[in-house]
Amino acid sequence: MNLLRAYVGLANRLNERIGVAVSWLTTVLVAVVCYDVFTRYLLKSSLVAVQELQWHLFAVIFLTGAAYTLKHGKHVRVDVFYNRFSEKTRAWVDFAGSLVFLIPFCLVAIWCSHTFVINAFMIGEGSPDPGGLPARFILKAIIPIGFFLLAIQGLALAFGSLLKIADKPAIDPETENQGADA
Image (cartoon, rainbow, N blue to C red; front, top):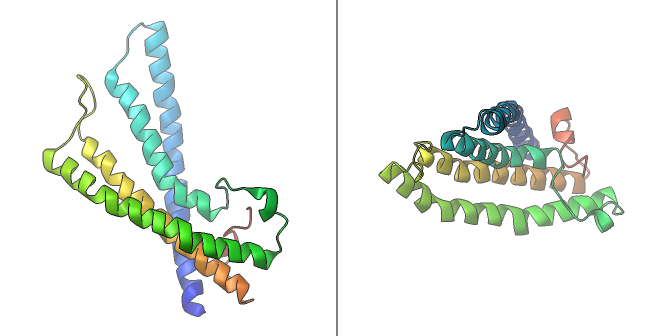
């Protein structure tokens, strides 16, 4: 049980730090959008690279922030039944859902994206649009990284749920946030 607690704590700390760091990209994204709106509508000029930068920033925020969102129990779920369940029943649902749906989906996404990412690196993929951003292969590398972080957090959710089921909840305050807001 101590090994499970240690893993949950480690995964939670990792994804908390990454989530907080990535959250600063939202400020950058807002600045880029404001710049794009200003130049497009007031100066009547627009750059493809600025538009692509918006998409790239959003993709990085979404992919790397998903594990942080799961850690804090803020993912979309059908709460019609879940909120009425007891703490142990919710732990069973989280445990089974993580092992049956979340982790396998993450593994499939990682597996399916690896050739896609390798090919992008091999050809040095960039934007197909004139004036677009180079090095699109870096953005594509975020896909398996994001799903890997989500799988790590999904396993932490499963282990944390198992600890709740066994009446040995995680002691670390950071791990207690695990699914608490769900």
